[in-house]
Amino acid sequence: MPTPLILREDDRDWAATIDGDTVSLADVDGTFAVRDIGGGRWHIEHAGRPAEAAQGVAARTGDVVWVSLAGELFAFHIVADAGKSRSSSRAQDALTPPMPATVVRVAVNVGDTVSEGDTVVVLEAMKMELAIRAPIAGTVRSVHCKAGDLVQPGLVLLDID
Image (tube, rainbow, N blue to C red):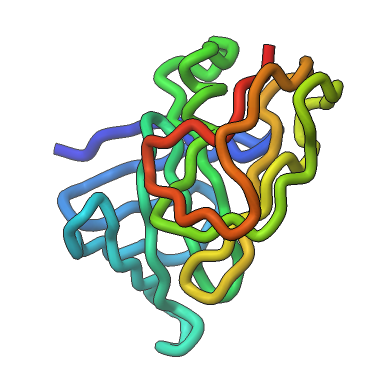
């Protein structure tokens, strides 16, 4: 039975339907075939695109799904109810690496004030740079990584209050 859900990327909501190993997004032609490759990661192919542009990977941390497809990186937030606001646990999930990665740069220090969407840490994974952005406005309370660190999913990179 198909499962409907809402995915949120920044200020845009996407109506999605999961049916077995395929995912459909409203307003996107074709479906996405998703295959579990272990370790909380999936291989993705987008029907209707040339093979070299149709393959990607995804990883999930909490209710954030990171998708790399055709050279672009997306961070989707799974939303049970599109009217709900983000919770603090969702904010913490957004401050964890989606996959094993190396810290390239920490862009903030303890005590810095950040706005929602500011880049706070830059990671490198799978030969791509991933900007970790502040999910909320606030003050950086602690930083748990430094440039050169190898970080794993589930590790909170920094705390924002």
